[in-house]
Length: 449
Ligand SMILES: Nc1nc2c(ncn2[C@@H]2O[C@H](COP(=O)(O)OP(=O)(O)OP(=O)(O)O)[C@@H](O)[C@H]2O)c(=O)[nH]1
Ligand SMILES: [Mg+2]
Image 1 (cartoon, protein in one colour):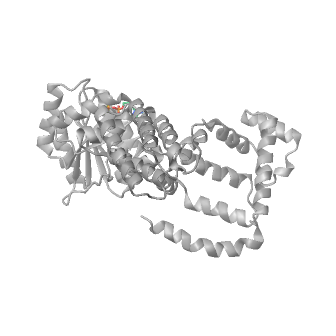
Image 2 (image 1 turned 45 degrees about the vertical axis):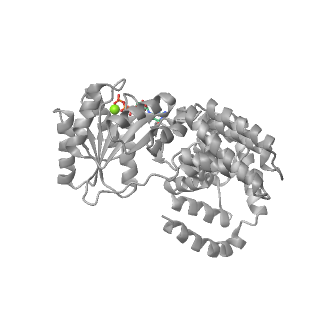
Image 3 (image 1 turned 90 degrees about the horizontal axis):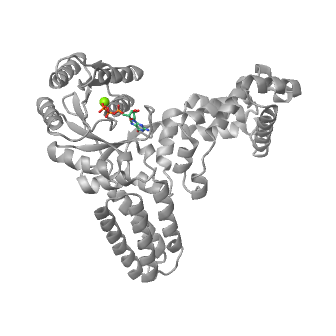
């Protein structure tokens, strides 16, 4: 997402970034490029106009202040503006003082409501809450089943019955009270377009259960259409915040960059993939830095903390220090990295990775191949790769569906890594020193949240 926009903005800014002095002409050229980039990213025209105007003001200010780094100030202004149009502050959800906190999900058909309901439940669970999913979409039997399946995948209870959407919603809230669940997420039916029936049904449901939050799910892939929908929904029903789905399929980013300014409601959560963990709170500032190629280290760290098994990481580090790191450990660490998601996604969050590199498709299949090769080795071969001769190599290749040359390449890579670790002084001699250093750091990490 946002790849094209990020690239264009970086190009526009790179020309003025390092300039010791900015002329009016420099600024106008950059502004023109920024404007085109935003329009090509499908950002609402009025939003483009106001962003460009505000950046111009900041740039004029930077020129007048005779700052040492006027270009950097313009970059900062662009970053600030992007953060602002993405919503400024990140959305903060306050739990009801008297549980349960009731959340009503609204949106057009296929916008991603049911998926988002389950993802949201999973998120609440990760925050130590105990959610209940309520299936109030009685349009088709499959809708309730879909939610039931998702609920069982994330091990969250689910409530539904064949009465009416309003009765189900009401019943769901009562059920949450009865079984002591503190967040209720009500999934509702969508329609193809906003029609009176849909609005009436959801308004009536809303009146009945008085939700603490009404979240509107919009499909980022629909660009400006989804922004128009959001506006109409918000006029008919008091929407508190937006959940932006399918960000992964929206390379341009127009919906994300327009919805706050046009509708006036923040994006609370975003979904960027079909998997249940492709979801999280939306942070405007982090997203803005990411668009400008300034990285999003915070999200990366959080992702690592969420998915990495600390014990596994520590075991790997210990083996490294003792010089006992073998192919088994290599595989274990590799699996950890894989768990964190796509390499491309990770690269996009790292600061300072050149644009060209960020856009390179990394062959995720390569990782799978390495995994298959190591899995095809015997225990002895993994701990003593030197024992792998040509006949063993052929056997491993057969077992993993690769070629002997692939196996050789992997072994060579592993050997290089070992050599590198030795040259860095990682080995038995330096183990105690490093260990002493590592300890306080670990504690700090745990306390961070
Ligand atoms: N790529 C991608 N697909 C998504 C995302 N969120 C949802 N989907 C897919 O979009 C389709 C529709 O999602 P649902 O959650 O069923 O949408 P809905 O709004 O509940 O649909 P109705 O109940 O029919 O109104 C499904 O195939 C989902 O897997 C996302 O963030 N990325
Ligand atoms: Mg649904």
